[in-house]
Amino acid sequence: MKKITLLLTVVLWVGFLLPNAKAQKGSTTSGANTITSGVPFLTIAPDSRSGAMGDAGVATSPDANSQHWNPAKYAFATSEMGIALSYTPWLRSLVSDINLAYLVGYKRLDDLQTVSASLRYFTLGDIQFMDQYGDSQGSQSPNEFAVDLGYTRLLSDNFSGAVAIRFIRSDLTGGQLVNGTETHAGNTYAADVAFYYQNQIRLNKKNSTIAAGINISNIGNKISYTDGETKDFIPTNLKLGVSYKTEMDKYNTITFAFDANKLLIPTPRKDSILSEGVIIPIGYASDKSVVAGMFSSFSDAPGGMAEEFKEINFSLGAEYWYNNQFALRAGYYYEDVTKGNRKFFTAGAGLKMNVFALDFSYLLPIAQNNPLANTLRFTLSFDFEAFNKQRK
Image (cartoon, rainbow, N blue to C red; front, side, top):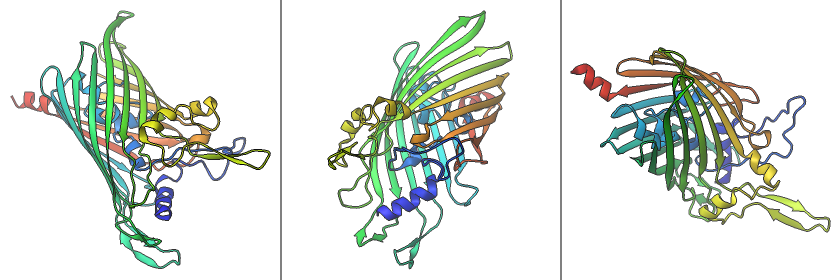
């Protein structure tokens, strides 16, 4: 099982979670200790708006795709109902049949309550399985998906909270026998807990909005592909974000957003060799529980607090709107060289019509290869309230 998992991880995440095999001049990846997890597709930015803003979205203004970034934002959505469909090609420079699709929607029940749901589907294309002797074991079409339901409630004029539950299924082997061990699809459940604050202010004689958000996502059981004891943590993640939106004049607005993300799973184990030749393991044990792993993730890095801070990823994003109809976006994402070395710029645009909105995003890696390099992603949104008004 580990051979197949490793093979799929290399194919899917080459240049995404692992540092460059070729160190750049003047830099080094020595001491790399990348945190990995099961079902990493849950961490991919699914929509083009936040994807164009450096993956910042915890505290940006609400839209149909808030389910992934912060479902508590739905309490402040300007429309009573909306849906969105996103499509993301993956490793397009190598293959043409690996894609991520994301369908999401929300409905306001009353002035205080909103419900939401989403489906995330990741297809890995056709993969030919081989045994250790190079003999074919058949062809499979691995895939992963997650279905979730969310509930959002307005707690005050400026504050809201949300919870979401999620079913996750990952079928990587198609039931293949691996070293005589029977495998199966991995299934697990998870939950999100989120909060969002938004306040309208008057600054420099201009209408402005400040916002902040927090989302602890994918709190759930480990996932396994066999009936044995080997289980992987899922990517439980802490997202914190702030944003500031202001009017430039009657027709122009601009938003600046900042996000910080940290995986709430243990840092991979390392061995420290003492002078006497005794090896002391440092890091997490394979049997550490999910709750224990979440709390210890703030202090279990072998390098101490210096390494803990390196496990925090940062996103910076900007969004410009003209007359609430045309948008330009840009962003930057940073991850420490020892924790994956993902560094990239993003850019995108959006066009909003009466009923439909279309967003595009593009990613430019600057530290290493990226599965989304030179790939155009798009999101199509539909506003039901605007549609009903137009029909009337």
